[in-house]
Length: 253
Ligand code: NI
Image (tube, rainbow, N blue to C red; front, side, top):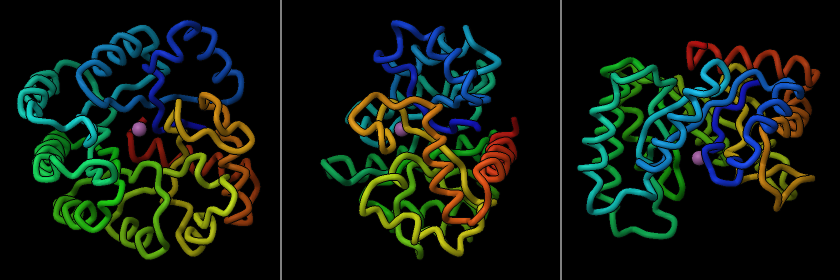
């Protein structure tokens, strides 16, 4: 299995990172992709990925919740680093209207500018969407029609939204949410081809049942895979094999 979205540059992992990585490898986690949220995380994850370069793969991008007055200069700095190393993708980028709508326009402009980076460098995107589905999907449709690919990370939307995402050739990133009680995600995925599904954790967040409330770990994707095997009526090994192949295809691993 490949964790396509894990913030293990987070301080919660820094103390025992070597041990942590060994544990994930021992449990069958092939690779971990680390999305970027701001300039601090960019510094942290860059050095982490230098140290474990065959195992941890870095993305670059400004998270929508980190878009503020200074977003243009942050994006300028990130843009100057686009060709400085191999990035696995542009992310995590997108729109988040949940807590604060002060910077909605700025979020949209930042999103578009980073989608332009992805298109011009032929990189996939890791998209964060919260309470902004219509704006997010209509912007993405403009770009996917011009060849953009990517994943809707931490997907928890409706069946109709899932269909719209796969219709534009994008993937659905499925994490711990699918294990939550009273969660309708399994139902919403029925009829959506498994060839569009990626597994992820969003570590340290979104820990699956039975580890809710703890710091998440990539190896706990096994609980997500178990739920997906029920949705698709195939073995966990098959789910693992297919979703790993999907991740390798999208991120060209
Ligand atoms: Ni994230």
